Length: 271
Image (cartoon, rainbow, N blue to C red; front, side, top):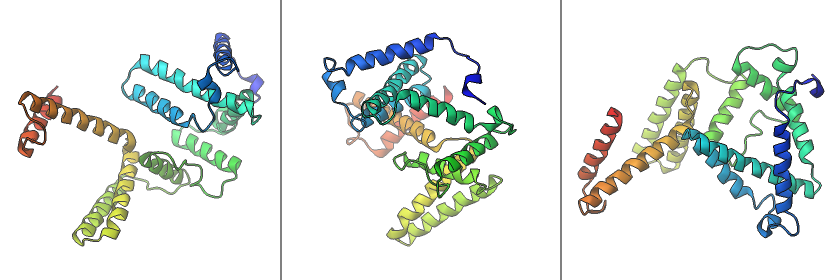
């Protein structure tokens, strides 16, 4: 399909808003603009780009629509900021970046814009991965997953890439068995006081749990973040309750803290 043949499904005002935003960004980065904005580089912006990305994730998980609207705008600013810096250095233009993305989306969805037919999401993603492999001329299906991703997220992406290549179990029961096998091996390493094997076995267990989550349709990364937030919330309640009693956690017994923990946990479960 030719790009010019695509139906225009968005109002012209979106293009106008984008032009306005780029004009504001250009003004900020002008010689008489903002000193901070002028001195930024692609590398210096990385921490802020990561921060904005996680703030978007937090707003989505918190189902805070107002925050999500704001945070998506902040993330868009960083995308445009990186593009503006690239233009200054004559690496590429924002127009080239958007044109390449448009072409990529068309080429990697032959079941939508071409003659290929598929109704399953798995096969659609399989088409995407195969096209990407050809375009990038990669030597391995394992290539292309950023090494700086959080470990649980990277593990899932590696597993997905293998699955799209056909290297995967057809049902969930062997996955449960693998988790149990890795747990037993971790316990054996602990009982044998085999310190060299403990890290390997714990890693194998975590990798297997990520895979189980994939089969269950649960993100291990998101699940762990939720559990961390829950633990943090409950422990803060322990601290508050102890403070009312004139104590700190260091002054209290484990049994006393467990009693408060269970009270709050039971209250959450019955709510």
